[in-house]
Image 1: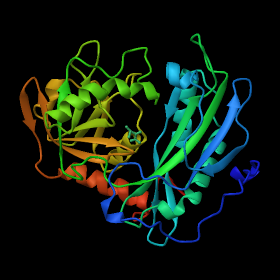
Image 2: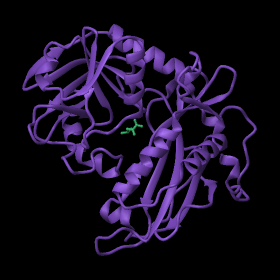
Image 3: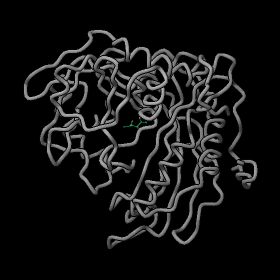
Length: 355
Ligand code: COI
């Protein structure tokens, strides 16, 4: 258990704030960084494993210009949220899944990783130290962003000699500027997110900047975001820039199978379980872009986006339209997921972790 870990050291500036809420307008949260009070930092060299972390004041970090992460992108990130329940208690959602995914990614990127115990302990410490930034119930959540980076110096291409595990947090509301309104996606045919044998299936930082160009172009044309296709056949759905995708047809709900090019989302996995329990036939499979033509509903899932309904998808100049509001299936799955995450619905799955 976390209690068997060494206690974290307490820098002299560290104190748990007594006030309940930070001074900010909780009604205007979007998905932009709101700096909070503390960040968690833990370091180790490549010969060691992580041992002792500490809470530091949130702020800039010092990195060698020749660090592995700055030069060769040796870095991973995670994302999870803490919600404040009506009774004031704080809930995390499946944090061990983030810890496991970070370990898988670290193996792929030749980095040491924190144990699951260390990971969850560090997440809890970060949330407690920033408790006044966890939004009031119904106003949003505290988004927690763990980073694992090659912080030591390299010049030739090689794994960095030293690593830093860092966690910061920011209160957030809805991810898309559309709020909860349906998204208008565009299918991208030339830029691909991942390739077979690449690192699309782990949460490396290098999966995200290569899609900025497609995303920027799409936004300049008025689309909400981009839906990517596989890079080999160029006709199967993969995912959206920051989230997984699902299609609904009758009682069947399908999402692209994760075969190394798709990020194994924790919200994705949870929605598969919730939908199955609700009696839907859920399939992880190859989905051809043509299937978008007669889908009843399309929605996206992710920690940041939660469950986001899709109102239209444009492919080769043709616009396939779905619900103008939130589709019934998307709404049902959203309500159950967020009900569990916020403590409004009994958590029979054992997914939530109280801090
Ligand atoms: C998340 O949903 O937490 C992510 O990591 C996606 C990111 C692009 C915001």
